[in-house]
Amino acid sequence: MVHGPVHGSEARPSVRLVREWKGLTVADLLRDEIVERLPGRVQSALEHIERGDFAGAERALPGEFSSVLPGPGHGRSQRRLLAAFVTVSAVFAAAALAAWMCA
Picture 1 (cartoon, rainbow, N blue to C red):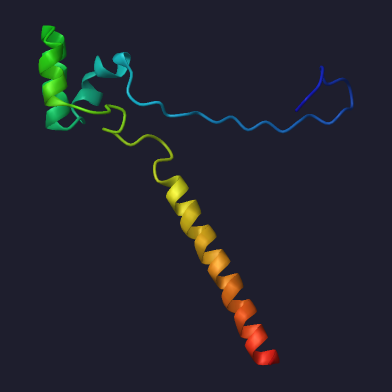
Picture 2 (cartoon, rainbow, N blue to C red; picture 1 turned 30 degrees about the horizontal axis):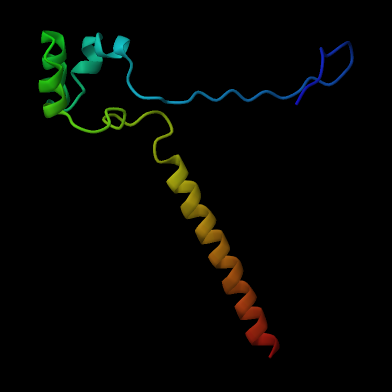
């Protein structure tokens, strides 16, 4: 946390900006290049919405809409979890091997 403005020779704080993916927006659905990438069920739901048939859109695409297209960073947390699991397993294996060799 940075308190107050940074003056003169004070070290500048490092900044890391992160953009969250919240899913498609209405503006995205108005762009042809995005709509063309959508699965058929979603395109069908969008056609219902454009006609004002919201019940038809819900029947065409029940559930959550945000998971239709993976956003930036999709799957990154699974890779981190796998890396952590492999690291912890290697540490335990090394500790078990060391204990076995000392016994």
